[in-house]
Length: 371
Image 1 (cartoon, rainbow, N blue to C red):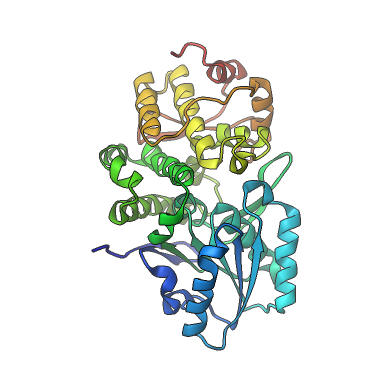
Image 2 (tube, rainbow, N blue to C red):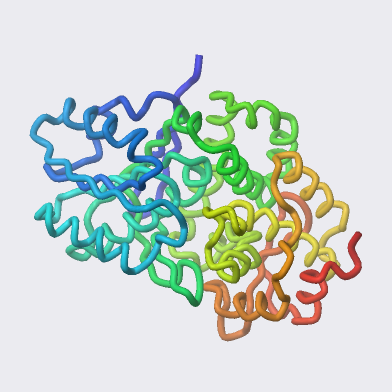
């Protein structure tokens, strides 16, 4: 029998992450975090046909007086724009949303980021409950309160910190997740072991088959461990001034890849977020080896685990090193001193590194010195 798990996120605005099967059917659980009588359910055209009606019915059965409106957007990272943000705000206006209204974000990271940003801005901030339906969103974007939209110049450049009232992660939703999206989420799970706990890397290696088979208990355990790592960091550093930046291991390279490809991952013409992060983690580990911070064998072991999960580990063809460098210079993690890389001293020991020369980055991007 699957055991329900919870993770408490501390800090100035504490909340609870609940993880387990069947949570979308529990109106009382979902409604517990809704203070007022108005809900805007935000989803996309992949997820809404599967789960929006189920969530609405559960909410209204639990709270008969609840007014629930629905906003459904097209799916895909390329839809996470200021224009779509404006549409969500217009939907809140049409609902007549008051200060105690709540946005329920039902979907993956794009929906969570966009809906959370709209909630952060409507009347200078109303509640949002994150109900992630992808593995990547369950372990990463739904936790921590980072909300944003993309610009042509870069990913997540316009946004706000806005912690949720609650996170509800129903592992049964992962049964309808496309195989590619499951694997993309596993990239972010691997990231937590890479930066915080070499023992978790060992656990993932031992349970890879169960995770790929979507075993409820294995997935719930992986999600819980990942959320605990993130919750600990978020409580210490809610606005990414210190340790929280370590969560971006692989993301400086990964975001540059996504932006250069025009966020084309969901159309099949480019890497999606998790795939780009997988490549980015290997590049970051190889950069650490180039700088003498960690042995190359650690990078190779990381690469082998990601490949076992069916993830790409090399740059797609056609991406120029100079263009990727230009994208990285505009990354949110860059500052007046240049690009800040999250690298490691080996598995489980991440660190922030500045002052890395362009020549070393180019060498890693070109694969120079690596088999």
